[in-house]
Length: 315
Image 1 (tube, rainbow, N blue to C red):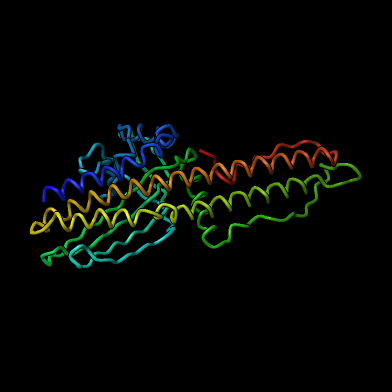
Image 2: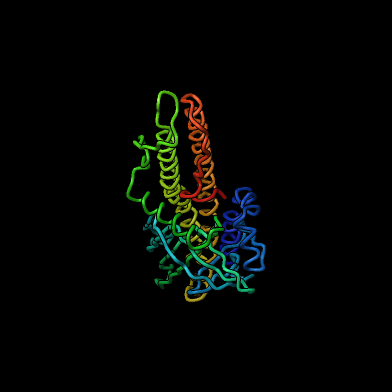
């Protein structure tokens, strides 16, 4: 049994250490810095996770040591993907895993009473297994990771989640096409309507944002790409190590596997979200360059748009 427990520990360590480079940039993001202020703890997401326990968020590690606790209130959740898998252990007994990957907006109030609004990656995990003695045990956990702080508070959070909800119903191409308009105070060469360029620009930015949200939703699939296999390998070792102690050791071992798997999944999802934001910024910059070029070619007065007002700030 000691040999199998050692394998579990080594496997879990491998899961968490695999994301150390991935999370190097996260620790220097506005969300990470704000999270440290809100909780009083500088979190290391390559070895620690945030577990949801009712109305409490606990920063723990795979050994379930608690480093920080904070009260939170989730405000909205948009499901990205549900993944289920059934298999068998080394003893031909059943084992199953269900994961739901979502994006959740939530409010945390720090000790000094300051409100902090975040976008969280959320992973709800549940596993059930039967050990070699025929004893059944299961473990369930919900993990979150803040990836964006909404400086504009609830208003900004609601706008972001509304855009994300729209992306669920779209194909990612929303916002293309020009819009007719009339503004007698903004005329270019030969009486050309300059506001048409602004309308087209705004439509293009809406398209950029729609595609960003569509891509972010796909990050759930990216997160679960290799997580299922990793969990199964770890969980199977738990069923071997538990033996006659399934009632106590099994769930503890499973929770460690769940935590290590969540860290791995969040690492992949975080990189995906960052990439989506980078493509969004590039798309917006291209649209802005084209807008100013069109104004110049048409002899229009330059009016600088505020395209971030409706799309949220890039963190």
